[in-house]
Length: 138
Image (tube, rainbow, N blue to C red):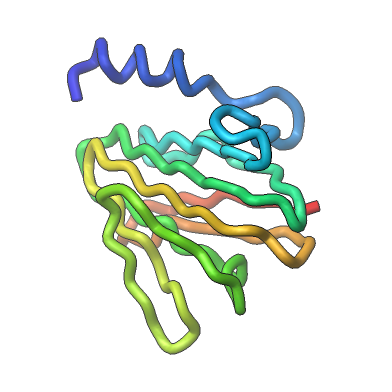
């Protein structure tokens, strides 16, 4: 994606919120939390996202880097139904969703309704990337 298009995308999607956690917005459907996460420079931005228990949520991961990254959640989708869209490649294991591989200039959208409050860490588990962020469900 050319630099100008990336800049336009960031302006339209928005930059990370201020404070301890970026609030999910209501852009799109009025009954859905939409939480954009930008992947760039081997970082997830924002590094903390707030969702609401029992309210539909859509996590939108956009990889602006020129390398593969993953969204590898820990416990977030245990026993949950979810839908994955975009050009990310989901990988499943015995415990359910293991990770979503997101290609360069790729987008992965995950829609679900969080049922359990808590803090859920996610990482990029590509070798050497050492990226992590947090989803807070309240």
